[in-house]
Image 1 (tube, helix red, strand yellow):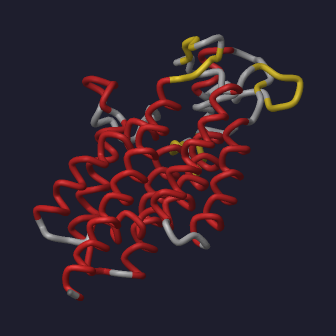
Image 2 (cartoon, rainbow, N blue to C red; image 1 turned 180 degrees about the vertical axis):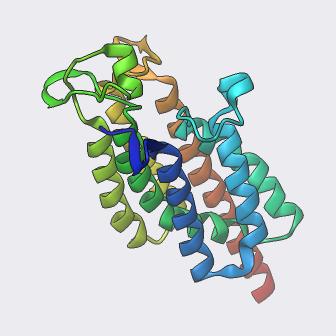
Length: 238
């Protein structure tokens, strides 16, 4: 963990906002490189995602250089206004979300490894296997000089694997959301948040429910649309 970069003359710049900016810009570049017809929609989606991911920060919501981005809140909330925006503009929303889903894992991998891990946010539970947080990191402010499990690195690795899984799938949006749901397993070894509650003797979290809801909703909507398209094709043939 090393949250600040020394650029000389006693000047330090924070790693987190740089990593965040690079990860978002990288995904945007890859999406527009493949299809530049969605520039306006992508800008709307990114803006909505950023604000949604910081919605619970109150007056600090616009302090984009600080940590506090919530992946699940960003994905869950921004999905709906972006969908409405796409429908208003009569754009192919299924294709758009597939396009974004293809490259989103790259951005998430970069952000987890070079943003969260180096900045010392989203830290893991105390563990004999791990790293001591840097005195300037957010983790150190909360847990002190305690060796922490590097959950950010493992989650970053998972998103690298997810990129290849999503890229080789036909239904990229659904598979990405499945990978997102699986990634919530890492919550069990995170030490910065505790959104768990017991259900039938099993510990589950709010974010796990949110990711499952998005996955089920997406699969259901796609199934319904597919059935409607088949009926229309049959009618046209007759």
